[in-house]
Length: 283
Image (cartoon, rainbow, N blue to C red; front, side, top):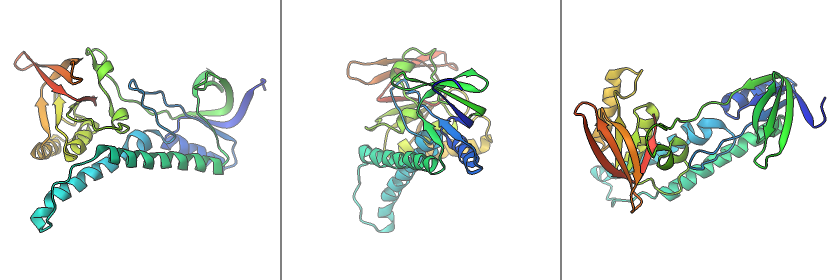
């Protein structure tokens, strides 16, 4: 073995549910296991801990924020059932702190589970040296060589920015950032019509925020379109606005800090603009 190189039976690259499940199972079978996990910061600088997409920027924070929106709906409905409640404003900062604290507790729980099973954890960004060895680089630029008989790649994916659109990368965010915002996103334009786009738009509307969804073609492509129509019709009835058949071409920051979005309507051939506090890419 080379000096400074650590050897394992199994090396898992990625700290999501799939990778952690592989690591824990192999460790229970008596194998020497290590997990390598490193989150590249988003263009806006957002980072998170062990647990992958679902825990940090997916199902868990989304369901908690959706629950907050449902509670807001119940408060608004309560007077119709005899509860003499006054309108209650939503505090994004309080919600965000609670959601992020819960996510951090899950991050810690995964660390403890790995430790209990004697799985070694490396918070380093790895690249292959050969078929059985990787070189990991820490935030401090320290290099670590890890070799294993078997290497499992379980890295998942990240949201995509439409970099061909002027200002998209500089001024927009993705769901990676939305779930970790300390302050309310305010008036938001959600670009895209995937289930991620509609879920985010749905809970933003439910939290009382002015929310618009820009759809290039059809919502929920690949899903049953009758059900898709029911979803968007219900969202519209709850206050979400839809811009259909539109494609953004430019995002600019105005002197007052707002974002001016320019889009094209192919059906009319005309250009239009709108101002927003946040542009969320969910394409």
